[in-house]
Image 1 (cartoon, helix red, strand yellow):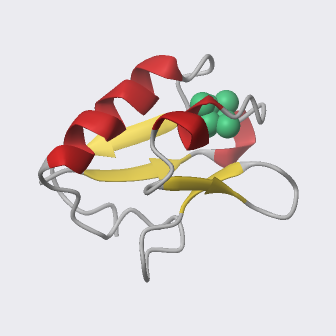
Image 2 (tube, rainbow, N blue to C red):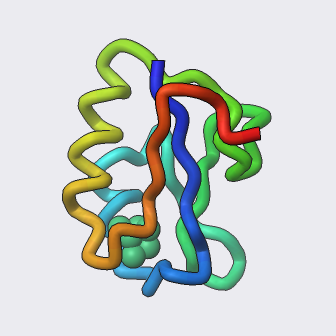
Length: 76
Ligand code: F3S
């Protein structure tokens, strides 16, 4: 499984991640990306598996500021 968080301080709200992986990323009230997997709240604690891993990897590649962080273990 993979885990992911958006470092919002580096997000420029380009919108690419939400377009690429809408099941994982959406935008907060300020237009910055965040992880919207149920119960995650952009903490990077929700396991991403199966087809979503591919969507995640595409989103990471699409991010111009490399602010989508990915790890093999939960972030918190
Ligand atoms: Fe922000 Fe990168 Fe998504 S800049 S909107 S996290 S693709």
